[in-house]
Amino acid sequence: MPEELRRIFPAPPAEIEATFASYQATKQFYQEVQSRTELKLYCDWYYTTAALNRQELQQMKGELNVLGWFRRGRR
Image (cartoon, helix red, strand yellow):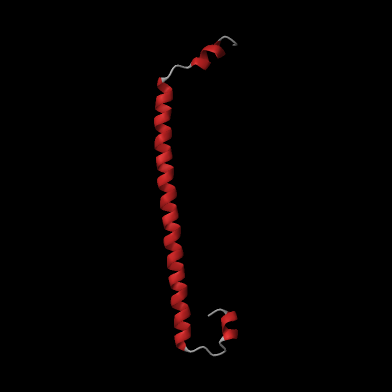
C-alpha cells in the first residue's frame, strides 16, 4: 500500500489491503486493454493508408508524365 494511504489508515486491516490490491490490478488491466485497442486501431489505419498509397502509386505510374516533357527541354 502506498505511504499516503498508510497515513490515512494507520493500521489497515487485511480486507482494505486486498481491496486496494484488486483495484490496482483492475486499473492496470483496463489500461492494458485500452492501450492494445488503441494500437490495433492505429495499425488498422496504417495498413489501410499504406494500401491506398500503393494503389495511387500504381495509378500514377500508368499516367503520362507531362511535367517530364517540360523538364527535358531545360537540360
